[in-house]
Image (cartoon, rainbow, N blue to C red):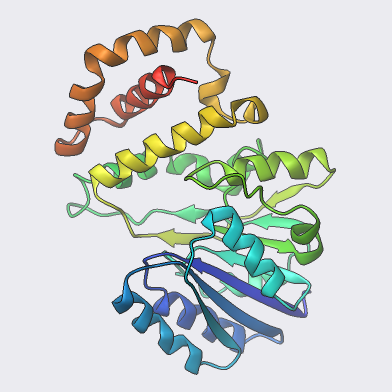
Length: 289
């Protein structure tokens, strides 16, 4: 059983007070030495920062406010250097803990890298027009541990994982990834190439903060540019890159005809998720070198 744990939470324009409270309460109930370190990665929302500052009143909790944005890879590497214990638990600041045994399950698992996954709450009406919600819910069947363990290096995300600090320091996330997406995918590949395994367990956090459709589509487009930029290194780790070149070429030809219209519909209408996947393929195929 793990005896000491550093819980590391990167945030950017999000309120993480409730998440920290939940984690702190569980940690206090366990026979473990711990710290919780939150790093705000260059947010400009002063109200959000002020609300998060209350966590510093909790024992063993610190809150660092960075003036410059380090990026998704950089902030996690920075958190690993700030930590003082041998095991690190990374959780995104916009997640929630709904499981009373969340910390206990991670303390009982001493694997090199352990990923707990995430779940999507079932909403009857409120989020049915939200594309991000419907997209995540559509893929939810793939998130249980038995499914993730079939492709452990492809089904890994940095939203909720526990890792030995020595591994994180020797194999940091690639800080060339300054835009959104795929830094976690390349890190999974790096772990595999260095002989490490990723153990998947059913110990999810809850994802409940869904951006509006326009921001989600824009974020997806940004991630596709990231995939295009690093496609040589991500071969075999992306379904888009695994498609035959002829399919992608054909999709690129359709983008000038249908891309803008489909994008508008995705933002303003309740479109099926498969059309969003088609848009992703067309958008990726038309990106130029």
